[in-house]
Length: 353
Image (cartoon, rainbow, N blue to C red; front, top):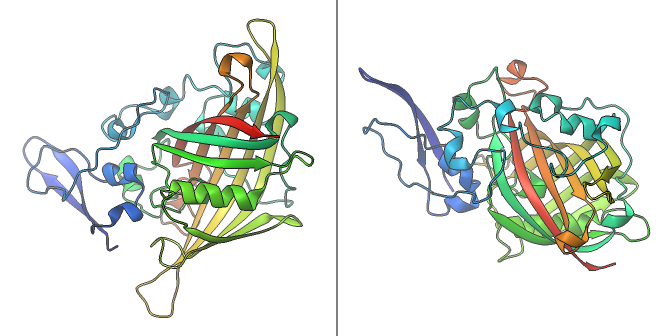
């Protein structure tokens, strides 16, 4: 794939518009996340530049996040208003968030500025999951939208920066194609230990997000003695964007909360986060030199215990906050707060355990 993004300023007597022209080869779908392809094509009244193609991909999920088509048209919508109705748990129930003082409270504030990047300190231990999450699950994850919350960097500067995690496939390993409408894969949490089978889960998720029609991941190297590093090796030439990915976890947080529901019953809600530094190695135009791209992001997961009304399905959501790399020219404009936040809804059905 050869792709070039050309920025051009157009001015006439009535409007002043920023145009993005995306030149993409036939296999563009292997390179860009679909909503990014659309985002690079800003609507304009000017006719002297036309996009080669226009990919119309839109989420049918109602939610607090704006959809991909409206994201660039609604420039006046603030991140705070987009997140105004977002809760860690179902808003129709009463929760114990008032008594919480950890990660759950941070998420319940519904403010993207709270999702600041973590400063590396003591290497975190492996994440342990509660009893209700243990077993094998069929997971369905659905893209729910995104927001560009930065108040110091313009939306145009963000959308034109293809190095931001999520804008290209494989730039966020766990959700290798951020804008994919729906992805299904298997997740395993060990019944005895409560630890995730990371090698299996990452392989399943990456392959599924990249289409599932072919095997994309050759091997996942993970050693529980060092739970903060994962190496993903890809099948040669299966994806243009990555030959190998190195993941480094800088911090983890988790909290288990007992939720008081409106019918006086209770259920548990588990929230956890993981701050990741990803280094992606791939093909380069320079012979003998691999392309290397670094990215920083954090996953914020919310998992709700299955209840009879939901057919005993576990529901949840995933927020992925993306941060600028220190080597980025715009880094000092937004050194700690996210420049993009992606939202996914999750439904999981238990198969064994």
